[in-house]
Image 1 (cartoon, rainbow, N blue to C red):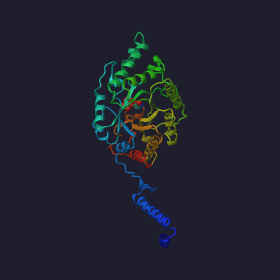
Image 2: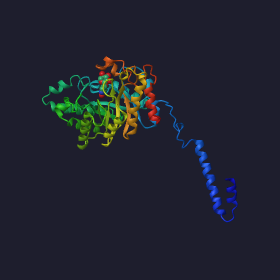
Image 3: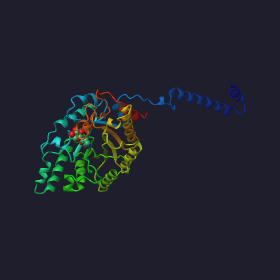
Image 4: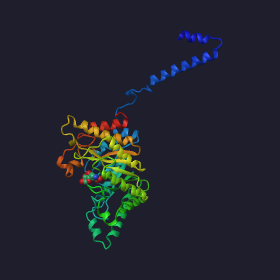
Length: 381
Ligand code: XIL
């Protein structure tokens, strides 16, 4: 090689060309050297740093929301977790109609305001949950409607007033609202025959979203629902998607779909591929999508040698499915740690407690599921 270079360099006739070739070769060797030293172009694992600092930090860096629901009674748990492990919060109960107004029209925003102020202090996002829902309503809502001369008009007025009052109160402070929760029948594949549907028909959804948009034009507006089977072809998913399409066709201002994701120990666990297809089937409609209430009971794996490793795989699958689908913007777990989960408190799930379904254990230590989720966000899993 050296002999050849010397010869080319000295070659009188082709001197210009020879020098040119030598310069190109030297440059090539130099650039290759720089690439090797900097590790750039290395296809090995050391190209990516797979160390999880904290979930909130990694989520923040990758433009993703990892949230937790905060219950009313959790003392200073949120001080240790929100903004550290989670960059988004949802009020587990405090923003529900019956919590804000135990009796129709009697609003008390104290608890919910405290949560929103805390979130602002920590610099985390707030998901508003929920404006209109069949459950956890003011104790006298139904009697108030049924007792009115014109129940339909009364219910319409109450729905309007509630949305304007609450979404107006938090205008600019809440990034997203679950405008309507669980519009589907509890078990079936048809729309739920709740009080709103009985008097206002399917248009109660249109009305709710329009009022929410007017009250807080910046907030992302969600329709939130749970499913038993997480595939795009499941009957309940198909019926829900048809409902969403009808809303879009009517020009209803809906921005996103929330998939709750409660895996409480009974029913099918999701597979990554089917979950991904299901999420895509909503983003293909031009909507965003988010997993809004995830938990995975340890009870799915009673005989596993390491149930928490199995649980971690389910979390990894859901996070990975969401990361893969453009327009899937985050995952919120329904609780901050295994110290407190609605599955251990609420029937019928509490009959199978303890569920240990979340990302932090009862000592607030990150579980395998936490690291699995983090590794997915880092691109390492
Ligand atoms: C649950 C809360 O976690 C409980 O504390 C409360 O007693 C009942 O509601 N789907 C939802 C949530 O959309 O609002 C529910 O939250 C859980 C199921």
